[in-house]
Amino acid sequence: MLKNYVRLLLLSLLFVSSPVAPVYAQSGIQLVSDQTALQFPQSISFQAEFTATVNITSVILEYGADQLTCGTVIGKAFPEFTQSKDAKVEWTWDMRQSGSLPPGATLWWQWLVTDANGAQFTSKKQSILWLDNIHNWKTITGGMINLHYYDGDATFGQALHDAAAQALTRLTQEVGLGTNAPVDIYIYANRDDLKAAILYEPSWVGGQAYPQYNVVIIKVSTDQLDWGKSTEAHELTHVLVGHLTFSCLGFVPTWLNEGLAMYGEGGPDSGMQATFDSAFANNALPSLQSLSGNFSEASDQANVSYGESYSVVNYLVKTYGRDKLSALLLKLRDGSTIDEALQSIYGFDVNGLEDKWRASIGAAPRTGTSNPTPFQTPTTIPTIVPFSGETGIVIQTPRPTGQPTATQNAPQPSPTSGPQPPLLEGLVSNTNVVMVVGFALVCCVIVVFAVAALILLTTRRKNRRKS
Image 1 (cartoon, rainbow, N blue to C red):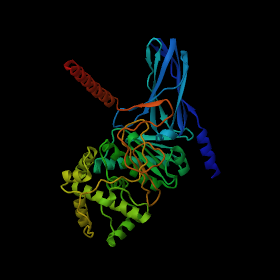
Image 2: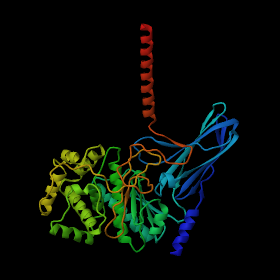
Image 3: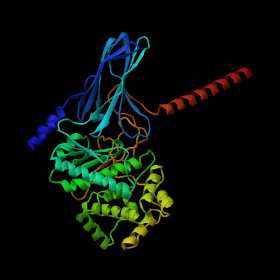
Image 4: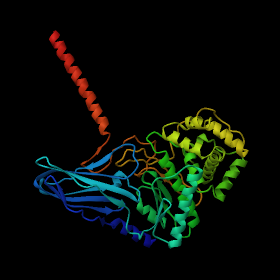
């Protein structure tokens, strides 16, 4: 335990600087230095120095991360400085306020500078990898998988890489889930290391998927290789599903998302299958509608939920093929409800699917309402969008057997529960930070008000003339 506390203390003191950028100038304004200081995972500081022939009057930092977004939203900071011909500025992005990025994300930034004559300067956009350097990371690439690990020998790392690459190939062939960019998988050796790399996550989390960043992080010790192989396939599936269904409109029910992930890892293990079989024998299978939202945190009930989700997805794949399943996911991406999407692709809704699935496995007929599936709140979801406009979803359903995992579709803040956030959510940050959110929309609103004011003024003038 003492060793782990020492490592956490070292991690909290970690301070990494990026190289100073080369000097170059525009319009009489010259960039002298441009660097960052990374204190992972709490913060990153941006530091720059400029010189000009007249006083520098404005310095703005634009920053963000490479990720999928629903709209163009750029973080902007206005560091304080004294106007002069030589300006030094610094601003710190505190992840403890905005919500942390996942390890392996790519951060970018650039500076916008103006002098007293109105001359403007824009620095070259630079980037840095958001990752600790306390670990001696080793990387294995190939098959659209970048496997990063620091504990264990080369055989251990190669086994995890090969298992992920094979899972990706199988998912592409059987389910139609693929990727056009490599997925980065970061393997942490223990739960303390994993917990130290992310903010505001439950202590039980053993793995997470970040579809927006093409990143998966998992805790896999050297004596858990088999569990690690299945878990990385599970989380990899979530990344692929998240990519395919990414939009500001779509909602993928939990039974479909987790069912696909279970399919990706090869199906339930023996313990989960036994629990599902027992519920089947006792006519205690939950309705498919009830699995659109939260899964129970009780181990046995969660096992049944995962087992049933897998069985339903497996039925869809084996009976109707990969093309229809891909079409179903695209319908959900485009904003259809699950009932509408199923009806359009297969000719039945959720209740109809459950009836056919139950008949296929010899289960007792479905009981309960025949009403359409309600739109349910997804599994408990902390939400925040620190600088981008995507809708965030975090599925934190504890895995009932082996090590628990969570699936993340957005950067994480302190945990809260509730529905998905607004389409565009501003940056929560230090003083002097603003977000340029929905610029075009704001312009439209201004134009509308201006036209209305002009009409009102014209009308009043006409009335005065008449009087």
